[in-house]
Image (cartoon, rainbow, N blue to C red; front, top):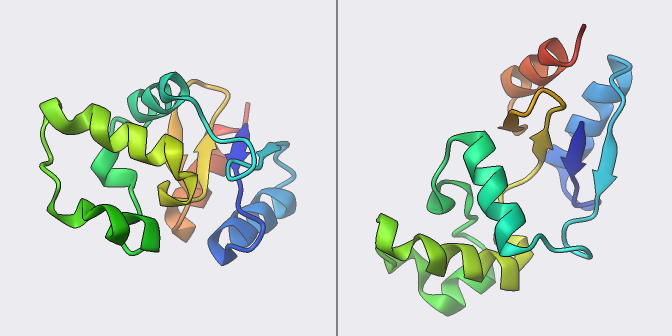
Length: 122
């Protein structure tokens, strides 16, 4: 599993702690230092079954500066959302867990983390 990690994020720390306690192996991706490409983000969205605005942190200053709360949430605007998150990766919700089975989860809740652990078991 790959964990998109922000070291100063408490939700990321919780995900690391949960995975460590369950002895689930994972690789960290410092996505702020190694931002995803548009293609990678499109693939993550596919794996999540989500639209870009569903994983965008609209409370971030980078979102406010762009006026993203008012952006259209439709297929024609998806590229604009993706481009903004690639340019400013702090806009991407965290932690994102890319599971080895090809699925993905946003690991912000204990339930999502329990599901990630369950899916990682043989």
